Amino acid sequence: NARLLSQREIEVVSSRASVSEYEVLVKELRASLEKANGDLNAANRTIAVSEGQCEGLKMTLEDTVKRLTHVSTTLAAREEELRALQQQQARSDLEMSALRVNVSSQSATDKAELVRV
Image (cartoon, rainbow, N blue to C red; front, side):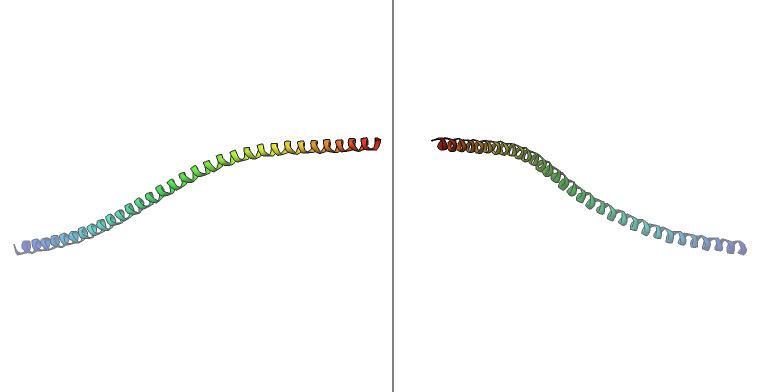
């Protein structure tokens, strides 16, 4: 009987040791879970900030594209105006050359008439 009691005491002590080990393990796992949860929350905050920054960059990029489109359209219009002005200048240059030829021709005719007189 004493032997059985002693055997039972050993089992109880062993069982208590196992329970204590499990309690320590559960505490460690809870601490690890809390740390992982904190890390996850920090990562989520970082993601939220990054998403906000990306949204800001997206808006900036969209504004830049709009401005570039406007500048491109304005540039095309100005180039067209420049071509029209260049054509007008070329016509004016031709007219000026024709006038010079006429004046020179008229001057030569006037000189010829003076010589005849």
